[in-house]
Image 1 (cartoon, rainbow, N blue to C red):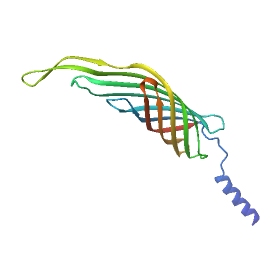
Image 2 (cartoon, rainbow, N blue to C red; image 1 turned 180 degrees about the horizontal axis):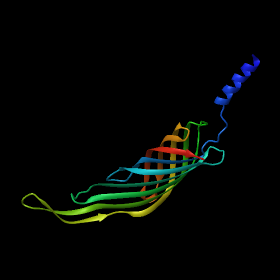
Image 3 (cartoon, helix red, strand yellow; image 1 turned 30 degrees about the horizontal axis):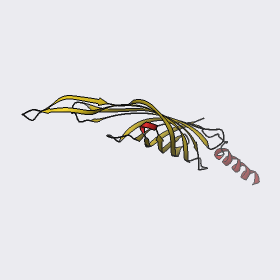
Length: 194
C-alpha cells in the first residue's frame, strides 16, 4: 500500500511540478496615446513604440518610448489646412510599487525630446464679390520647426494577460520649455521576453 501511495504521489508530482523559470525582464510594446497640443487643435493621437527593461533583480525599470503624430484640421481658408507633426522620444526610469508577477504600477521620471513641425495659417485677406463668393487675396502661414527638451514624469499600470502578453495604460506630463507643458495618456499592448 505504501508503494502504491508513493507511486501515485510521484506521478502527480511529475505532471504538476514545474521548474523555476526566470521571468521575462524585457518588453516591447505598441500603442496609441492622446497628446495635448497648444491651440487651435488642442489634442491629437500619437502612435507609440516602447521598450522596457528591468534593471537587474531590482524593481527599477528603464523605458524608452518613441512616438509619432501628424494631425491636420481646417483653417480659416477652405483650401488650406493647418498641419502639425511631432516626433517624440521619452526616456524614463521607473520603480514598480507592486510586488506582483501579474500587476505593475510604476511611477517614473526622465527626459523628453520632441521634434515639432507646425504649419498654421496665421492671417488672411478676403474680398467678397457681389454674387457672395469670396476671393482670398493673400494669406500668411506661420509655424514652428524646432526640437524641445525637458523633464518627463510618468505613471504606468500594466496587467499580464498571459505570461508573455500584457495590456497597460500610461499617463505623463512633460515640460518642453518654450513649447510648454504637454500631457499624454494612452494604452499599450506588450510582449515580454528575456
